[in-house]
Amino acid sequence: MVQTPSQPLTLDLFLQLPETKPTREFLNGQITQKPMPQGEHSTLQAELCKMIDRIAEPPKIAKAFPELRCVFGGAAIIPDVSVFRWSRIPRSASGRVANRFELAPDWAIAILSPDQPQTKVLANLLHCVEHGTELGWLIDPENDSVLVIFPESRVKLYGGSDPLPILQDLDLTLSVTEIFQWLVFPE
Image 1 (cartoon, rainbow, N blue to C red):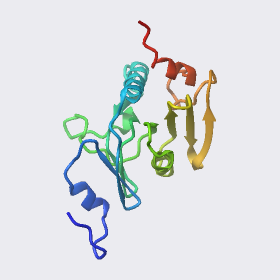
Image 2 (tube, rainbow, N blue to C red):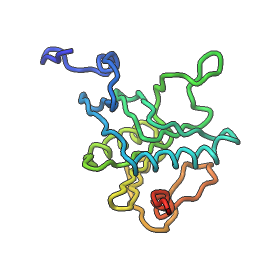
Image 3 (tube, rainbow, N blue to C red):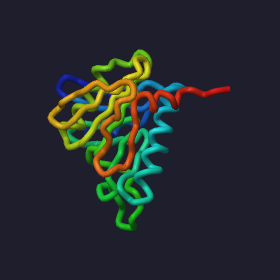
């Protein structure tokens, strides 16, 4: 599809485009391609999903979804981990999980990849928070830090052993040190 000045790209047109690998996102009329996940990124993403689901799924509090396209507020964003409260998970009439999630996650987690612009990832998380996301994390493996985005676009940088803010009602305690310890594979 060729974009002409008389036909700006809209979310609806973007959603009609064929899927690509790596996936693409749409924010503020612009398409960006997500980088292909590498070792650290994949490890952190998998461990976060397992940790959150182990605590949140049995009591039906929440569910973590990896690489889930969320369409809301005129954008199509794919956080590395999207956490939805159980009652907000879109379902079909039969009760199965829906394919399309047309709402913001309750907790959006992004993991910065090498050479990925931090401002682009931060813009996605800010968009999420502006549209109802309760908590955003920007995990930066290069600096062993987590930038946390709260409602009203407040941000705070965490490092070391300080406990990270977690989605309310989850009985989970994590520090930045614990998260990055997942990357150590002893022989």
